[in-house]
Image 1: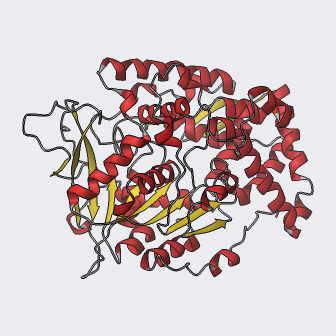
Image 2: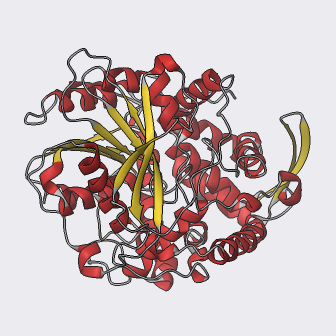
Image 3: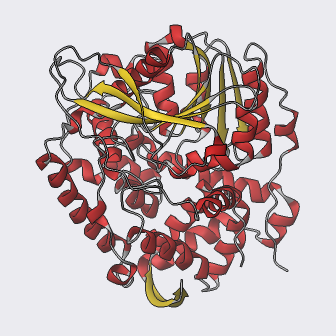
Length: 516
């Protein structure tokens, strides 16, 4: 089956467009103690470290900020910044600042998307767009990269998911040791300090106000900025919303279940899908049970090589979760039905895609996730969130096992295992968990099929934002790559005081793939 993935299609196209324009290798600025008389924070203009062309009209530099904000003698860190100039002759005075997800997601897709896709064309039509590598991410210095983590598909193809995960944890623990040996204070890389960095960026660039776009983890960062530094914010767009105080460790099984239930209900509500796959939910759990009891081996080629891959219930669920997240829910009924008949080609394809990528993409650069930053931020957050507010799903492990299918519990429970050795200090709980109550105009976009940050995590947060507009779209983890999501953001940025025309949301539908 040919997989149609709107988000991946956009990202792949922009990456290919830039493939002939490789980044110039430059020696990054080193972190240093502040010199007497140094003004920190400040902005230093430099060449762009991401690949750009003169006609792209991009200005670059570094935001210089203290690593540990409570220590005046803390060394200075550098956050790489790109300013995409507006195509308008008379741009609005308030730029749109992009807050990447992850934390530590690669910056390349975001940068190239602004340069080469409709997203950038629409947003740059009226104002400048600013992208910042958050502290520790990508080309910022220091970068919390784990380049030694690359595990080849050949190494782990025959392993069960749990055994593969154990290899990953061992490599990640080595990375933690390397970063600590470098003298990096990993506890300084958290959402509260990143929010202060964003306010510093606005100040040193001389803007009275800015607009924020944050997706996934970036939405959490945006909400902290709008809460702690409200005077400098004109409007906020939250895409895949993570409100402060939501303990993902407790909610993850519920998030997965919410997305699966949306998938099953969506197919059941469509006459053609329901006729083709009359009991999708039962079929899904039957496949999971069968693979949990008896994993199978599948021989399959990928990128010119042959592999024998062991498929168990966790690899099957991993494929389903990835498809839900990447806006491919419409393919899943057919693929689950195929798996029930013993055809695991799509499951294996997804696994090989990720397994081969682990051996190649974990290097410093525009296409690389910064895993050291991911775990520094996430483990700091979880250490601070042991007593997060109730109202979310805060079941214990034993209670999870009684409520959810064991495959979901097993899969979700592995997400934050590295926090057992990734030692970072908790943040101030009052500062982190204080609810975001604001009248700043806020557009909130959530995906109906999002397995990570579904609507049940964010509706209560919307009630505290008195000037918010909340829309649930039939998409996965990110809404702006749908024409409707992008049009909502454009209308909102033009006039955040009024609700954008949302007729396109009602007109959206899921085009389920049916048997031929």
